Amino acid sequence: MTDRPIAATAPIAEKEPNKKAYKWLIRGTVGLLTLFFVAGIVWGANDILLHEGKYPPEAAPDETITNPPATKAELYDYVRDAIALALSEKPKLNAETTFNLHDEAFMDSIAFTGENADWLTNIMKHTIPQFEDQLKKGEMNVETEYGDVLDAFLWHIQGDPNDLSDAANVFNYFRCSVCGNTEDAPQEICPNCGSENAYVEKFRDEYNIVLSFADGSDALFAHFPMRSNEERLAMLGDGLASFAKINAITVQYTNARIVANINRTTKKINSLQFIKDIRITAGIQPIAPLDYVGIADVSFTIQECNTFNFTWLHADICSDGNPAESKILSPKQASYLSLKIYAPEGTKITWASDRPEIVAIDADGYINAGAENGEAVISASFDFDGKTYTDTIQISVKTPTEGVKIDRRKLSMKTGETAQLKAEVSPSDATYQDVTWHSENPMIAEVDANGLVTAKNRGVVAIYCLTEDDYWRATCTITIEGDDSRGAN
Ligand SMILES: [Zn+2]
Image (cartoon, rainbow, N blue to C red):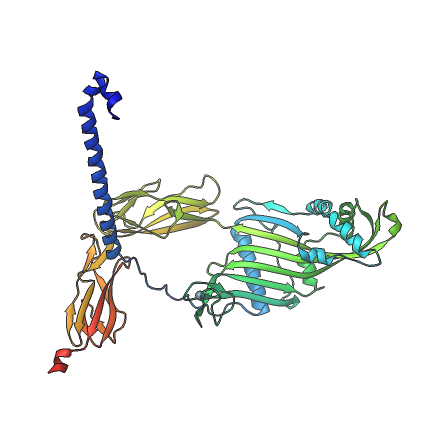
């Protein structure tokens, strides 16, 4: 019935054979797609079974740090030397001053004396925006170029380590070996995964050093650019002008500290902060219509932080846009390396290969692998201010391993028996064909370097192999029963 309107006209009726062909085409296509789909699942499952994934060995334990600077004198010298290095190597510097007026500590620090303290405190909190505007006038914002002399912008540490009230170096942390959670101190029970006694000590790549100065020490005033009390009075007066006139002011600096983050292998500073609390005590006279209050005494504390961030001259060789230490090419494969360069614009880069017959590189970073397997080191260098800066990347030319399988996934054995397992690395032309053999419990079964399994005791054990290249894994599960025949006889 549904065909009637179509059959009613001759021209459409003539198209009937085409329509049938179309139907078959659709059926055929759907059939093929179904076949591919099912095959895909089978192949996919096969793939999953074959390729259990990569199991690289646990990273080698961190290099033990011998004698990290720890005493006041050592830490003081360490930071001072790091600043000296920055002054001589002339990295790019970003410096800024910030005043902290928003956190609870500032709010809690506002203390009026007298019977009107509470509502004066509330009114003063409303003056924060004007106050901040005034403080901004005292901000330091500096951005230098590579090679600029930094003496005028970067503060030296002067004085004597005896001025320090405390010095600390946070160079280690603790990591749960089960889940990877990190903490500043070892945990008996991991708060993340519940494992017991799983925390191991790790060392940071940077030292986080805090030098604290005793209140009132000479060093405190020698190291930090200061404003006179008159300047502070003017700044505060303008800041509080919508609310009060400043009558008298005293300024006291406390909790001065230097926080330095320094790369422990290069001794280059990543960041340096000079932080201090400014305790201000003033007599203020609220303006009309609050002038009837008279002079009220107030004190409050502002935290001032001067932060110096450094970008050191260097170059990062990148593969696929990200800094890379190594890269794999197939024989005769072409690719390219890019470079992130931290140097003045227009700096000339020189690319080089230590083994051009293995991997050649041109002036634009395009690399070409030769026909042979092998390793080459590609370098990118530039010169600035009489020094040469270099980054390198290791290029391996090989046909990479993509997986491995064992000829048997399950095996039953009796104690005392031996069985030979065979591993097959894929693809068959992968450069590295060797595997290593492992038993998860050698008490149940042992496996030798060639995959020969010896059943030792009853039980179930996983015997697995790892590829030499990339640590792909395949497992054979072995069930071992006692030698019943011997027992029966
Ligand atoms: Zn954990």
